[in-house]
Amino acid sequence: MGMDASLKTSDEVFETKAYLNVTKSFKSARWVLPKTDEDSVARMMQVHGLPEFIARMLCLRGVGVDSVSAFLNPTLKNSFPDPFSFQGMKEFAQDTAQKIMRGEKFGVLADFDVDGSTSGAILIKFFRHCGVEPAVYIPDRLTQGYGPNVTALEALKADGAQTVIMADCGTTSFDVVAAGRAMGMDIAIFDHHEAEDKLPDANHIINPKRKDDSSGLDMLAACGVTFMACVAINNVLRGENFFQERGMEEPPLKNWMDLVALGTVCDMVPMTGANRLFVRAGFTQMAMKTNLGIRALCEVSKLETDPTPMDAGFTIGPRINAGSRVHKSDLGSKLLSTDDLDEARSIAFVLDDCNEERKKIQSQMMKEAIERVERGGHDNAPAIMVSDETWHPGLSGLVAGRLKDKFGKPSIVVTYSKMADGSMEGRGSGRSILGVNLADAFIDARNEGILVKGGGHAMAGGFTVMPDRLKDFEQYLMNHISAQMQNVDTTQETMIDGIATVAGAKPNFVKLLTENIGPFGQQNPEPTFVLSNVRLHMADVLKEKHIRVQVSDWEGGARMKAMLFYGVGTPLGEALLKGRDKAFHVAGQFKINSWMGRESVEFMISDAALAQGV
Image (cartoon, rainbow, N blue to C red; front, side, top):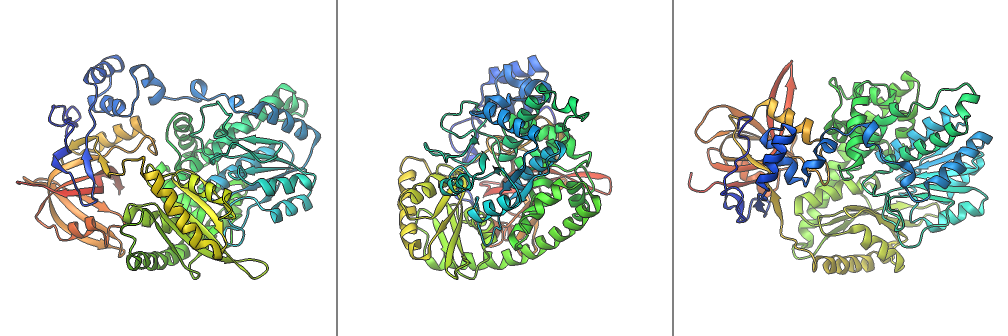
């Protein structure tokens, strides 16, 4: 696979039949290589001077010839969206600017995950710069669950808050918002979760998923919405000569793009439109280590190179999340908003310890959940739903995600928390597959009175349920998902972007791919290549759950390390462990490994099939 021939362009590759005749891989998927418009590929190469494989990737992602520059090189100057395009933003910004100028007290109530922590940190930094230190409340994941609650509002009011800004939550919190208004506080909501036709009675709701919002920015995470709101407030304050009259510099908004990028990547929102700009600009900023919290997390995790989106998702983000899983929900926003390096390092070490504890608990919980699924006969059910009173409430989402990956079905995990009156409350998290909207199911169940709370995104959501309604909810959920699946083709497909060889996989190819097509995420997935007819030379197990193999082209030559994460116990993993000297077609993504100043290409396996006739 050289730079000029990384993808085959023959009609054979682009036939509509299963690619390489793989109709049922080890993940029970049909392999598909979509056709591309060869004229568009050629024109893109000519007009923009692109290598063929980059032009082909752009065409596969629906990027038109006229949109190439905006996709490849978005800039803050030319591509930053208009914050006032959000429904209600103008009124919010004007109202909030007036309150800042009067020196009113604000309260920040943010979610405990990375998106919430970054949103909260952006708000804290912005208000602090404007001279109005906010009160902050981060709900306890384990005892209070997702979303705002009356206890939080009472605490913020006691701390003097006149206006409470809810970040990454609140869109479906009708009763809590009403309670806050009844206490005499103004309520503003920055969110990106699914919205209903009716909205809570808040003073301001900035959410691109509002039914009446026409901004076209519904790809944003809450941190992106929050950042845009700060830009809008700043615009109004500038117009009022707020900073000039007080001899102050304007807030260094650009410096906080690293927080936007971190929250965006970790919340796994679509990597399209404004999110591409935010992540690209944000990781450029992150490399400068101006945020002391991110700097401390890089130190404690021994991340010596400039952070990448993968580092954010697998190294930095889990540590921020870990605090909330062990009753330390406020540590994330504290870490990311501090201006004291010693404090940042202290919090980072605590979070690192929390993350190690989380790994141990999650491993045992996952083992028990798999056993529960295999004993429960979920083979013919449209979804998986398991629960246990002994399971850790802070890990339900992570385990649900692993179950979804392992069994290929929407998966829901329910844990339990003891309330102040001694009663038990069920807390559930779900992770879905394409075509099944979990948020709709949870919201509908809540509206039917089956759930206490429920909401989220299409692919991930959460809910609160009383134990005596759990069976009712399970039946309702199965019926809801079955109805959704009637209108969806649920045949699993592995989409192939191109074919490669082990011998031809070079670091420059992977770098060009990442630099041009990345950052990757939903709706801009990392390109999946097939190494066809490879020989497996060895396979072993790492950390009791991952599988490492070495492959070469069938004819011989250079060998490449390949990894299958969480493959132990799966059909794909077992096939690899028993596949020495057999011929495989292996699908996955290329990565660059840097060690002692040397770079090598590795392969992350996502699927595989036995090669026939080799």
